Length: 231
Image (cartoon, rainbow, N blue to C red):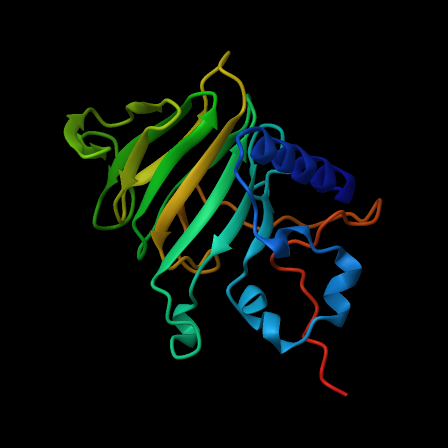
């Protein structure tokens, strides 16, 4: 992706958060240059990959396959003594025409919550023991405390305020219902590790390669410089 595309996407998500009165923590507003002077007191942000994030799943076509997100809080299962949080929280932003690739998680469970805007459509499948997609069996889903069973491949519609519980090894993709406008989603989950806990089917990437055609508006969560050592 071009840096100019990333900057545009981050500003659009920032505006969507403001529109729906979703206030962001201070580190989301740090200028890129400011990070060069920050010390180890901000290690949690670096080590737990908090902050702005962009994915195009390696597609090279962010406007069709990809979305913007912010990790607000998270632990780190590789550094449990230092970061013992067992939970994570994210915000996700999708425009009409964008979608997230089909995937499941081995470790984390999550609630996907429509925080405002349009309607989100989440397609669900069970998985086989060999991790392939089960296109046949019905899927039991939990929607704001209500359990129901739907055919494989059903798209669950989440209107603003509604949520879906996504269990381990349940394949899911999501998109915006056409004609309803961009959507701001919340994600509440167990501790999140995007480097090891995503099973994409078909295989996909996670973090984009960046073409630097302009200066960054914000640093992404995998771009922070090492901590400034005390003099």
